[in-house]
Length: 454
Image (cartoon, rainbow, N blue to C red; front, side, top):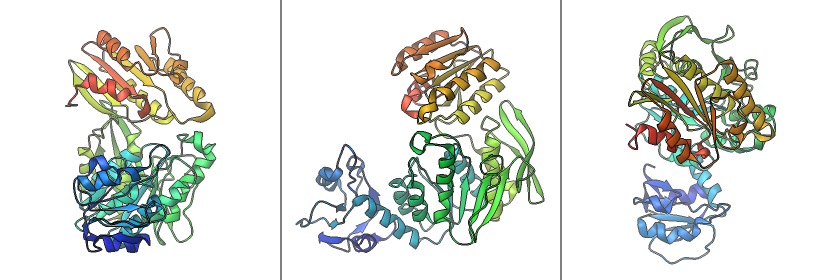
């Protein structure tokens, strides 16, 4: 947050300074009193269980330079206290204020599956021609995005933002704050169907990314997705498709896997370039094509963009591959949906050099009333594409039927699962770990890989 002062925060939020100096400089925003480093604006959010107003003094004592408050009407303190009606809405107003000061172009990404990987690949491809800012971690929500926007510096030349969504209307709020020039929708799946009711509702919510798409902007769509291939951008914006089909403006062809990693030719507006990825799975072809399309649209050399994509080795917990004691471990534990689960199993199936292939599958969450049906479909796939052993973790995963070689562990029994794996695994094996983040299968992956993850 460059050159921001308390006075500007008051202006951005429409708040009232209760005490302290309006010229006090601020270097970042924090919503967590335990991570204060010094010089922050502390934003006490009111959650379902905890009201962070009670941590204001702790944050100021730890070094925060100022704080918002929605509970105090008067205060005497050397630190600036800014009275606002709602701290969350005030934070979003600060995000909009920061966005208004930015001159660089912003790319926004949403979708049911693959947002983070696509974000990382787009940033990698654009880095061949720009200094790129990208969403740090998972700061893609109504709270995270305003903080993300405040962290963009004058040295950055283009920004790549992940825009998340878990409830109706949320993406509209986020998109209007972000005000992107180019919006990407990776796909429309069934993640969050529990909150949104149907895939059609999810589609409509994903399309609200256009509520913040600037006039004359570009909507980049996955032309292979059955719900997006016929979709058009709102009036005043252009539509571009990427994927593998004939309908795609940016198209991958001659696709093959080498040791599980995609190799293909990217056809981009009359140009062709060979792409070799270091991440495993055919599904990454689409992510890479989105990245190449955006790089090309912003004038980056396709050859150089492809080189940068070839250097990308994945994101923590998303199909990262490690070898320990002769065992290949595929850590894909960050999250899971039916589409990403099948994609991960296809990667495991492609590991032809493995002596044995083992799948460790935990529950896929937020799938609504049809959750068990989606898990049964995973079992049906495994019956057609058998692997040597399957381990399941959680109540929903218990319905995955994969033959006699399937072992089940109850929710919370990560330790029992780990002990059984270490007993069974031997050199030459390849083991995939995949499940929703809340299932904490990542704890098992970390122990198999080694606590340092190296």
